[in-house]
Every structure is written in structure tokens, then in C-alpha cells.
Image (cartoon, rainbow, N blue to C red):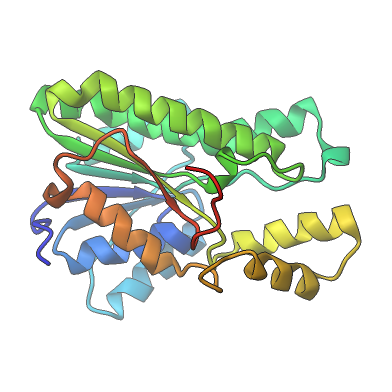
Length: 257
């Protein structure tokens, strides 16, 4: 399927690894000009080299998106893109016994505000132009309470509400905003989740991972590329009537509708 992304300008935040890197690669294969933002120069350079080895171009931009001014500065340099896919920031999973006001603030800074800073930097410009698509890769932890993920789950829930609010506010001006909520996905964040679960329960990592996978009806975690495929579809004109959607990608684990 031709997603009609050739010649489009796309920005992926958190593009140096995991789902963000998979989104950057998928966009590049479709012919988009891809800017990838990360605050880690080593990971960003490695991502650029990985895509270059596949014959794909990737324009790295270094910025800490928890800083609103730094975010505005990097987007002023890039300009208003056709597509923004937010993947930057991950709130660490923490046993409830280790929670504090600081860890809760850190969770919001790491996940909620990185997405909001990037969205704020582009959405009004998209509206003035009359077109644009924002896809926020959030996480299923915002819909199901988990004692290990209270701070991050709250950030994810806030992101879903804000995303749908932006979708309603800007739909008439040609801007679409959608959410993807991945479940267990093969990225480095699985290690963080297992570390927190091990500290909370004292059980071995292998046992906990086996239990997590057993709860997935499809019988396996997602690959980042599978999430990226849905993200770039939502970003494309093929999804032109989809906005304010919250799409679960958890292999069938959700028990509610």
C-alpha cells in the first residue's frame, strides 16, 4: 500500500532506539524526510548509522524535550512538519514502596511533558497551514492500574486525555491527533519493567517474563516495527478520517472494550 508519504516532512521524538527508531525507519522507507530527536548523542549517532547501512537517510537533532525552551528551539530549526510521532520519554516502573513526590514529578516530566512540549511546538503551525498529523505512542499502562507503574500510568492517562482534547480542538483546521497504546514490546523498557517487578516481588526475571508473555493471547510480545506500521498508517492520508482514536496494541490482552 502506498501511504503517500513521499516528500512529507516527519519528526520522530525518541528516535534513537526502540519504537521511535522503528517509526523513523518506516517513514524513511516510505520516502519521507525524517528528523529524529533524542537527548542522547551516542544513541542518536548509532541510529543514524543503522539506517544509513540500509540506504536510508535520517537527520539527527539533539534536544532534551523535558525542557520547553530547548524543544521550541529545535522545532524552530526544523520548521512545522507534516507529521509528528511522539515516542520520547519513558517513566520508570517503581515499586509502590519507593514512590515519592519526586518520583511522581519525574514520571510526568519524562513522559507527559516531553509529548506536550513537542505537540505545543507544532500544532498551531499545523492548524495555520490547514494540515498535519500527530501520533502519540503512549502505552497501555494508562488504562489499567498497576502498583509498579503509578507515576507512569498517570502520565499515560493524562496523555490520552490531552491527545483526544487536541484532536477535538484542531479537527476543523485539518489537524489529526491519535494515540497508540502498545502492550509488552521488545524494547529496553522491558528490562526496566522486569527490574521493578523483581524488586517488588523477589521473584526471578525469567519467571516474571514467562508470566507476562503467558498473559498475552497472541503468545508473544510486539516487535517495535509492528507498532511503527500502525503509527505511520495513522500519520498518513490513508487514515484521513481517523482522529481522536486511542488504539490498543497489546496482542489481545485487554479484557474491556
